Amino acid sequence: EEIFKPDVESLEVTKAPDKLLYKVGEAFDETGMEITAHYVDGTSEVVTGYTVTGFDSTADKAQYVTISFGDVSVNLEVEVDSGFTIDENGMITGYEGDESEAVLPDSIDDIKVEGFADIALQDSLLRKITVNEYYLTIGNNVFPDGITIVCMSGSDIFNYAMMNNIKTETIDT
Image 1 (cartoon, rainbow, N blue to C red):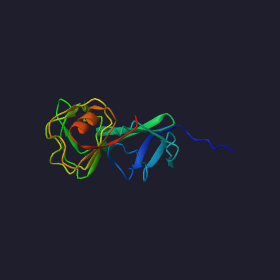
Image 2: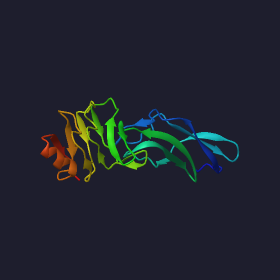
Image 3: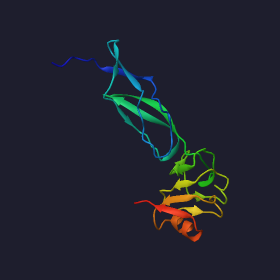
Image 4: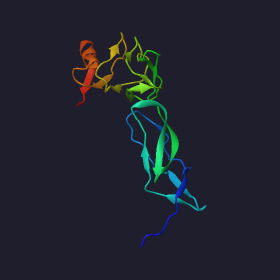
């Protein structure tokens, strides 16, 4: 027997998920998140069966995911941080992260990544960088000694690595 539920008036994130800060490539994790539906009759309850949309782990920026239940939704701010810095022309200018491995995002603060500026990563702690972009502008002396570049065979960064004796690992497209 189905129990009648009144219309949902609003949704509330009553407990944020445990994880609000993501690295590039990570999936959204709703662990710890609690969503409460408030009904038109004044009652409310914690609900499951909601959907989460709008998360883009390839874009380094603060962003909102939309949590929907029935016809009602609520936004939750999360952040993807790659550790990379970028200039207004889309050139990577550095890496401020403290990880030894990183994935290059498609964009940072809505600026499309176009390439790497000269000596951009020379002082970084990076030992491995994954680059999913095929066409990139690459400056001089960008990478620190001993780095491994994970990239597509035949891509601009792959060819740069081959010409500069940088170790590569190839990824399937």
